[in-house]
Image (cartoon, one colour):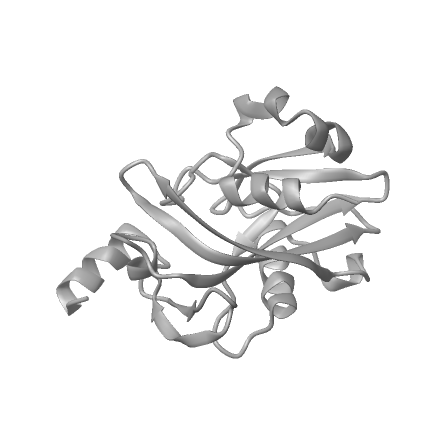
Length: 189
């Protein structure tokens, strides 16, 4: 990407100049690539995560992505999703995003864990794509106090997870993110 293109991309989205970890289909790191390059054109397979946040009653917290998101803006996610940076574990990246996006600190939970991993590739309108090896993490909040960042989260909704899992078609009006739908289908106890 040229410097002019990188500057223009940075103006389009604040994360455009960041790097993500390129991976093979087995999630072995193959170096870093520009985040915008990974999400445009044919895309570049990269490492990602999604974290499913539960309360002690078995409800999942769905978070609506902010309207300023370049991909899947205003779609509903369960609950945060992002990319670890080089040298960061999935758990460390998840802890960081939980705090940044929802104000959830590590003292609110004690069971953050990776439960699954899958590869997927999905295109979004004419804006780009996701091609990720996505780790699924779960956490149960002992304290459900939240302080969402409006630049990240447009809305929140607690939903009965079993009901959502068994009847996803009833939730279609929410426009669920594809990685969340895949994680939910694959990762049910």
